[in-house]
Length: 194
Image 1 (cartoon, rainbow, N blue to C red):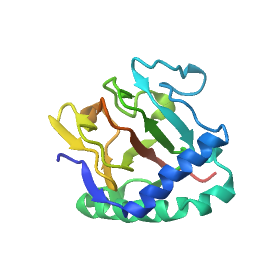
Image 2: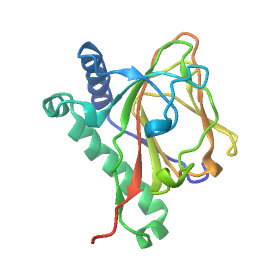
Image 3: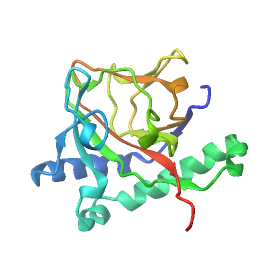
């Protein structure tokens, strides 16, 4: 699929991350999803209608309890497969997860409805790769990659890795009936040592 890696993570790990999102909701840590970054971030439900929790905002004791380290280990295995398929990436600088990912919940009719890509400004220029895992099955839901003319169905554990640039502009496929949960984030270049 034109530089879109398609892998699978154990469904039991996905179930725990949904439980984590629900636990965070009970603790008041879930916020309406926004578009943009920092002071430029805005809530616009016509463009993105979601309920998000940033992993870095989750208390450390819940990370272990709900399997966040197990997810990161599984994601690393997916990344290794992506790098094996694209060995030239071994020649670039070191990169890894440096921006906090988010667990996102889209209620029926909700979604990231605006076509977008992930490296859009100087503030996001260190993003090397994007990743996303569908945490549950969603009938009629998924992600559409515009220029690849490809729609990827939301299936529990399905994990995608792709480049962050305009070439991989994408948009959520909104389900009118089902809830959709994902975890998503970026691999960023590490800052050079001082």
